[in-house]
Image 1 (spheres, rainbow, N blue to C red):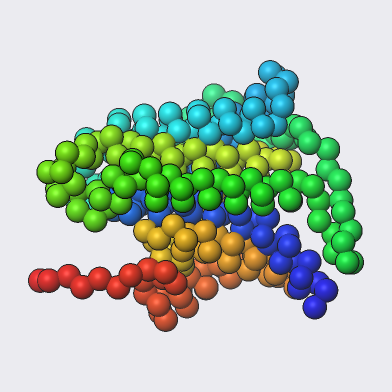
Image 2: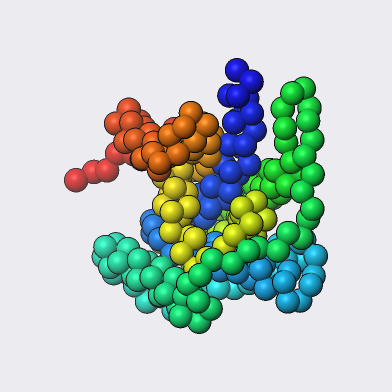
Length: 292
């Protein structure tokens, strides 16, 4: 029991990273029904931005976090404008293939420009371990979890309370009807990409601090796992994406704790298959009927 609780603590820290990534997937899919497979690479670029801000500009961690969010938000808008907007009315498979192409472009572009080797992420915050009731938790784990929860709550407020958030929900339900009501879908979609990309940038800086290493291909596996988290929670559902991220993080740490580290990725996909067999729309997904 002691080991299980300790792994739950570790899993919550890792799961919060997956949750931030999964929110970007689920928001974009909810608004324009696009699976943005380049999302994991925006997370990678956020980590590299934080690396250079900390190592060469010698600014503090929170400045690196906020500027990475701004940088990735701008990058997300640019990618949407150049790569996805021209294909807005194209078949979905075309946009999907384009997303995969953008992903490879970002990965190989970073490898070509900055080298493919891994580099150590600057430890801007000195790690301290606290022992509470026989369980160990570090200040970095607390920082990651608290930061992720604050960002999730802020996102929820933006979507539920702000004017742009209401416009996002309207476009997600019926884009044509929203446009008739005076909502500009292009602005809403760009804002959605900016929000999701900002969260991915924050996740990249946090994971760099957590694992102390980054590389140009670091976004591939976490990006896929975050997509799995979004599907498990119910893609299109923000609470579902958050819950799915935490579940995937906890599952992965428990599998590692029992000595099956080589199968941690397989365990994630097995859970995906089981969830889709039992609940095809995910935990919080809504069943929809389509007339034919």
